[in-house]
Amino acid sequence: EPEVTQTPSHQVTQMGQEVILRCVPISNHLYFYWYRQILGQKVEFLVSFYNNEISEKSEIFDDQFSVERPDGSNFTLKIRSTKLEDSAMYFCASKRGNYGYTFGSGTRLTVV
Amino acid sequence: GQQVMQIPQYQHVQEGEDFTTYCNSSTTLSNIQWYKQRPGGHPVFLIQLVKSGEVKKQKRLTFQFGEAKKNSSLHITATQTTDVGTYFCAGHTEYGNKLVFGAGTILRVKS
Image 1 (cartoon, helix red, strand yellow):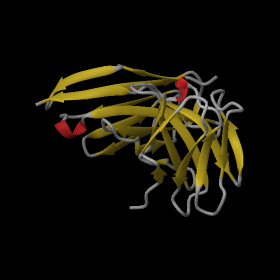
Image 2 (tube, chains in turn brown, blue):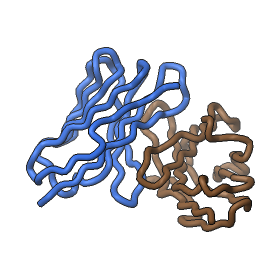
Image 3 (cartoon, chains in turn blue, red):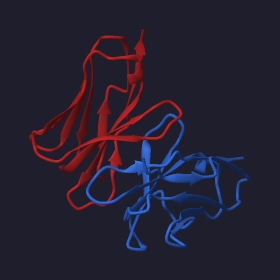
């Protein structure tokens, strides 16, 4: 069964450093998303991406965040200057049409 | 903004007992989806409901979408230890492009 692949599985970074989280969505999917989940809490929407542009973003997705689809397969989330409160599990998801999302296994980001 | 509430937060049942989680949205939804997240895992899509009053079954799981398309429920009959995890509902509004998740219900099953 096709999978959404995320790397790395765990990233530890110093506060103020930039991080890039990588995702390879399912190849024939058209819609891409980033979500985050602080430990033990709900899954929070960050951003949706379609047709090579952001289609919607949440209040969490401020100027410190950006997304890119640099080639035909990768979908990245960059946090420019990490804060302690950015520590969370970040999930990438993709879907083809009006159906369920396929989530990746996530990247656990720890900011120290 | 759109909010999706889910109750209970936590339920601990004896194996073989039934389990139900309820979901309520502050706004009318175009569809509702249900996901299961095993401990340490990622959300896995279970089902999508689109029509008002829709009921769908997957083996021991029954999903309902309310007539007003603002609430939903997931009922598990005769729980098993493999049902352990967090069950999330998530909804799209009519014009939104984001899927908003409820807080989830954590299910623990005692054998």
